[in-house]
Length: 459
Ligand code: ARG
Image 1 (cartoon, helix red, strand yellow):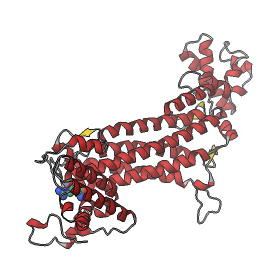
Image 2: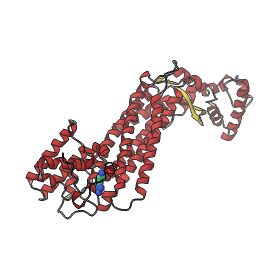
Image 3: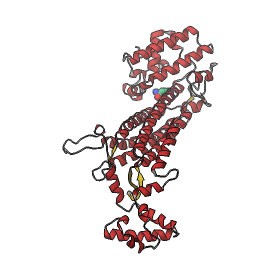
Image 4: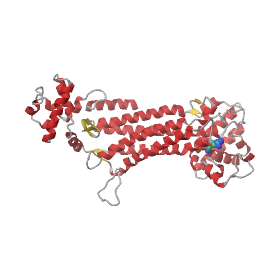
């Protein structure tokens, strides 16, 4: 393939060899080839419909591009750094294959609207894949939630025992985070799915193009309203990365809990061997590498968000070469999101719960103290007084190293004569979770109802 630069007309001297490599993007933007070809086929089809190309030229272009796609997919395409990027590599190969008709493809178009179109087509597809992967993880969470709807563990605030909760309820909290993530991506896609093509370099083009037709061919919702904005806008990439940063933040929080829960000290869950690794020196080790790595990866995605914002902040309208720097962070965000979501969706159903350990842990730390206070309120005490009474009872238990439910009735009654035999039902873990039986509460029956609603939302 000829390496002759497509823009060499006004140049007398060859490009400096280092500059050529320094400014090239083909090494990473070649992954856009399918979208570049898809956009070019739509563009050529529109040019022919508008009488700018002949039908024969259009057909030669389309066939030529399809052959190039096959060559790329067979690994038979020779990418050239001298041809700078995916766009000029493909256009050069096309002209080499079909001659003059190939040289007409770029009529009424610029690489500026071309690249913006390619990236949007790419991201639109990836958003769909990522949303499907989130959905798979959500379904996995529902399966675990269903299985563990009655499993009791301590709920924490400040990582100190707070109140008993059900494990199913905890899984549903994660489900909600992911539901927002999936929604956010769908919303982001509304801004992604707008077509820059036809903006040309920055001002539009003198040819009688039909942007609505091209948009329809490419299933874009509409052509971009303003040519300057169309070639220079990367908000959609920033928005996507922000949504990705939130997803990674959520996965990182989940990771943190999985890591803590699977420690010998907590012993709440077992992560399947297939998602853990060993130590080269300590024979006993089984390390939660997968959640740790996902937690770690959140950092680079947050970095990409900051990188993209900074990339854009100093740019005057319209296109600037700076924009070439949008791709690597965007691609890396997509790759790591997909990987992290996939490994989570595979790992979550394989979690097993050590229900007895969770139960024992919930027995520690006076998890039902609030239930006792609520009991006293039901017997007519103002909540503040009830809080005070229970606080004193807890202090006694701390001293005696026992639980509230271990105190004999007479001793409990020394704090309040409103305490009767029925208090012991209130002090059990089961009584505590069952009592929180309203929408959004942790009672097993509410968890089951929430799972039913969640399934309906996903359907
Ligand atoms: N490789 C370039 C990019 O990724 C394509 C657009 C180049 N346009 C230009 N006028 N130099 O942004």
